[in-house]
Each structure stands twice: as C-alpha cells, then as structure tokens.
Amino acid sequence: MNKNELIAYGYSSLHNHTDLSSNLRFLDSTITIKEMLDYANKIGLKAVSFTGHESLSDHIKAERYYHDNQDKFKDIKLVLGNEIYLVNRSEMEKAEEANEPFKFNHFLINALDKKGNDFLQKQSSLAWSHYHVYHGSERVPSFYDDIQKLMESGNYKGHVIASTACLGGYVAQEILAYEDDGDKNHFNKVKAMIGWAINVFGKENFFLELMPSHHEEQIIVNNWLKKISETLDIPYIITTDAHYLNQAQRPVHNALLLSRNQDRDLSVYDTAHLFSVEELFEFFDDDTLTKAFKTLHSIFDRVQDYTLEHEPIVPQGRIPEFSKPSYTDFYHGEDLPNIKKMVESGNKTDSYLMKLALDGLKKHNLKDNNDYLKRLDLEVGELVKITENIGQPMSSYFVAQHDFVDIMWTQSLVGPGRGSSSCWLLNYLIGLTQVDALKYNLPHYRFLSAERVTENTASNYPDEL
Image (tube, rainbow, N blue to C red; front, side, top):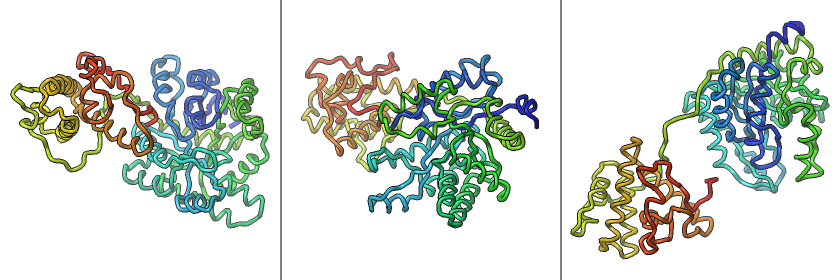
C-alpha cells in the first residue's frame, strides 16, 4: 500500500500506558484515561489498548468511559491488556539468593474478549502474589510455568494475544546482547522463547513488536525483528509504547519523571506517545507499514466488545474443618430467630461464621448474656435479609475479612477498629475489631443494614489487601 492507502486503511495502537495503571510503583506516564481515548479517536486509530505495568487498575474506568460515550467512540475499539514482567522462576531465585543483578523482562498480553480479560485478572492476581522488593525496587513477576499452567487450565488460547514488548523485553535484550558480544547462542534463546510463546498462546496469537524511535538500540532491534519475522514466519506489529499523549506533551512527561530522579535516563521515551498514521511515515517504509497494519487489522477484527460490569460478588473466605454449632448453643430462654435461621441454613459459610461468633461469645464471657445475644441476633438478621436480596451468603464477606485480619496480625499490630466497623458486635466477636459495640452504645445500623445495602466497609486493614 502507498501512503494514502495506508492512511485510509488505518492503524491500531496496542501498547499504551496511563497515569492510573503505570504510576503505582514508579512515575512513568502522564496520560489520563479520558485523554487516551479522546486523542486516539481524534487521530483516527482503529483500536487503542490500555496496558499498564503489571496493573489492570485503569480497565474499569476506561471501559465505563468508552461505553458511556458510544456515539463518540463508534469508530474505535477498546482493548484491555497488561504489560507483565515475565521471568524464569529458578533463575530469579538463584540471582536473588546470590544478591546479583537480575532483569525482570517485559512481555505484553492483550485480551480479545471477556474470557481473555478473565485471564488477565487471574494472571495479574498471581503476579501480585509474588510481590517483593529487590535491590530497592518493588517487583511483581510472572513466571513462565505459571502463565503456561493458567493458559492450559482455563483454556484461554485464542482469547488473548501476546507480543514481545519494548527494549525491556526478553527478545530485545537478547538481540542487543548479540550485538554486544556476537555470541550466536543469544539467538538460540530468542528461538526458544518464541517457541514457548507459540506453544502457550498459539502461533496465530503471538507477535513481534516494532517501535518507531530515533534510539539506536530500538532501530537495531527493529531490523532484527523483521529478519526474525521472515525466517520464523512470525508476523510483526508496530506499537508505540505511549507514556505521554503526543510530542507536544514530552516536556511535561520529562518534568514528571525527573521530579523524583534527576539522573533518570529519558532517551528510551524518545517517541513514547500515540502516533497517527502520518507520523509513522518518518520511521518505517511503506512495505513495513503495510505488513504491520494488515497484522493489526487481523487482530482488532477479532476484538469483541464487552463490559466488566457484573452483579455483586461476595468474596469467599477460607473455611477449615470445624464443629458445626447448633441453635441450642446460643438459646438461653429468649428466641433468637435470625441466629436460628443462620445456624440451620445448610450453608457451610453461615455455619462457620456462627461458629466464630460463638467462640467470641465464649472468649469474652458473654455466652449467657441475653443483651449480647439479642444484639447478635439483630445483626445476623441484617445478614439474612441481605443474603436473600443478593442471592449470595453475606456471611462469606465476614469470613474473608476474618482471614485478612489474621494475616495482618502475622505481619504487624492491628488497630482496634476504624470507622463504622466498630458499631457491630459481630465484628468484635470474630476479631475484626477490638471495640465492644454494646459497651459504648454504638448503633448497629451505622455499619450495615439491609435497607442500606451500600454498606460502609471501613475495616481495620488497608485497601491494598
């Protein structure tokens, strides 16, 4: 295609960062969600992807803004992805045990549909379970074996695409290492990595990433990737790894990054912004653009529109083996209809929560105190009503919080309570708070009531958990 045909054909940008998803652990982007979608639409992109640095935190807001403005965005597709840090588990552990430098290589994954986004959520959660600090930097690695097992267990092949990412990617690093020492074994490693990706994601779902740049290393990588594409029959795409909106915004981006580290090398951000088709002409010939654009069209033609909205999901807590309580364990002459209903519901989570409550009554010598039993019955009544309203056991929420607080006690001291959580006796009995609501005459409805289902979930553990 010639330049006019390329302009008419259109381009999609599948590697971009916003301030909401890429500034969690270090300053990196100045683009807001609204700016990303509005500007991508303005310059005529066919699709734009949100790919944070091991973060999906901009996905919901991007999806809502996109769907709330369907008329505006009728000609552009929204893609949601994640730029992960893909490493070999044993190599990382060995390097860290020896306190040696280690590279946490970048790798890009984009979801094609709702199931693909489900993969991203599970993959990112798994990565964050490996969070640690090494050499002063927060690390959130994904392991090759974890990714492969997750792809296979969920049958996600065909629902996500993967690509080689930027200069921080494994393929680019091995290419540059070859340029440095001439050891052909680097290309054996490249072939092995590509072979792994094809096996895990499928040949039709893996791509090499070229990027426009004046940076010498990126130009070297681009040239080698085109050769590798031809040799191994792996298609390439062009991405721009956008961290600022356009070239006019680069001084702002520079100022942000240098605000915390005056010695930070900004050369790799040379062209890290959203590109129109016309702007790409400076960096690639028509043949290269034609091949990349056709591949990109084959991708965004497969992208499905979906929403992340769903009915409330009550988190599931861990339930160990336990002795199921009975109504007679609580009854002391006055009817407790809600406790009776909860104990006899037949739901294991309900029974476990009441077992925790019973343990708390015994611990605080309140088992025979009818005032406390009646207050507990009142609060349990709210859970019974909410459970009926949402069709899920609300008891699961409290069991999950019980787990979180137990984990916190293994790491540090836990505060006595925060906000309205102290207004519930149940929270006190199961150890979520250390404040006796009856002793201080705190009204239960301040925390949670069936009439006010948007409960204040203020608890005594941080939001990050």
